[in-house]
Image (cartoon, rainbow, N blue to C red; front, side, top):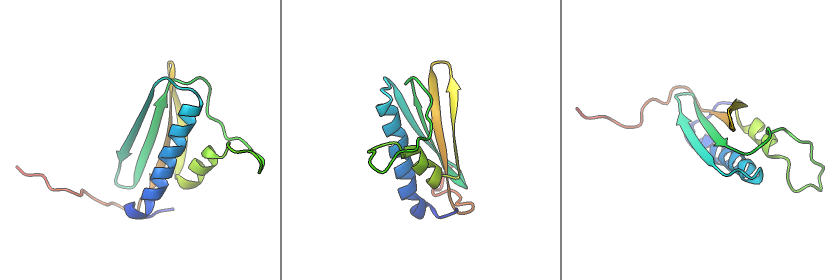
Length: 108
């Protein structure tokens, strides 16, 4: 699923919202959000100190939560979890169209 940055903006915003919401609901004390733009994708990474591992759940229609990682999975080209000491980073890559190149010019 490739698209231009403008088309992917809503997906990036939604993935950010889901990852941050999951960290807050897991009762993290510290949360760092990073967005890293690449030529073909945007990586969204939420690092937190909450206990446990994020897992996809299977909520019933009457549950008010439990769909966040399904949304992340649907909107991203790939996602995963990296563990480092007492923190974990949940990351997702939202694909863009081709090589967008730089959007600014540097002066000497």
